[in-house]
Image 1 (cartoon, rainbow, N blue to C red):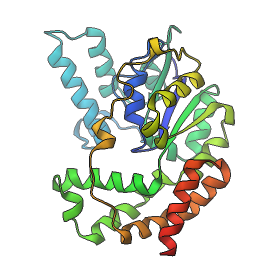
Image 2 (cartoon, rainbow, N blue to C red; image 1 turned 90 degrees about the horizontal axis):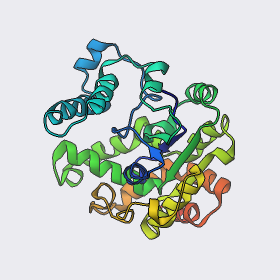
Image 3 (cartoon, rainbow, N blue to C red; image 1 turned 180 degrees about the vertical axis):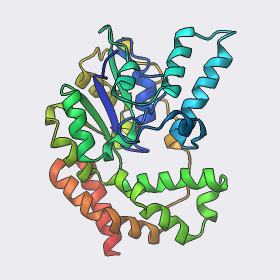
Length: 294
């Protein structure tokens, strides 16, 4: 067992599921069978609270264990069942986290969890002490577009397919303005925290705009950063597939909500563009500035 070699830290709704699905198919990389472990951004729970918890990450662990139990008589794997049981039942600790990753050195190991981008400095410092060689992959998307996509997914679960359109404006703005929602998308703040403890050469920044225009090229850049084979032979044939997680149709963003989001993220976008200065951050900032000036 051993700590992972890399983490995908975000951002939410910026391509992390696409990245996970494609990295899992690379022959030189091992990722957990569950995408988001949520070790760095949730406090440990004892067994009884875990058994009773309705949190999504605990529920997914429970469902994964149940699926492995059901599959065992037909085509399941005892090894995968043991992993699922360890993942769900054992108390979360550094030892538990290390036990989730193989340590034979035959493959690069990693985990992808978009909640990690926004953890506090103490958690990042502790991670740097434990895994100083850790590489980080951070995918970014226009935070205004990203926030609206997150709201669409949230209200669809809560109210059905037209949930975002049927929800009162005040309820939508409450969701968009919650600390939990905003902290995911203030990229400049999140980068500053991670950069205090990890050098720039260990941090990869990619863009959802690249996933739209050249997914294969973006994926090859990630593989090169991780130091594994980036030849076409090691890339899944469906790397350019548009997964519904990101490409489903969502209601147009009303101008009043766009201005609200521009006020929330305008300063962070200005700081991000001053730091990264590229066509993507420049476009995001320009569109937010136009909304504020309208």
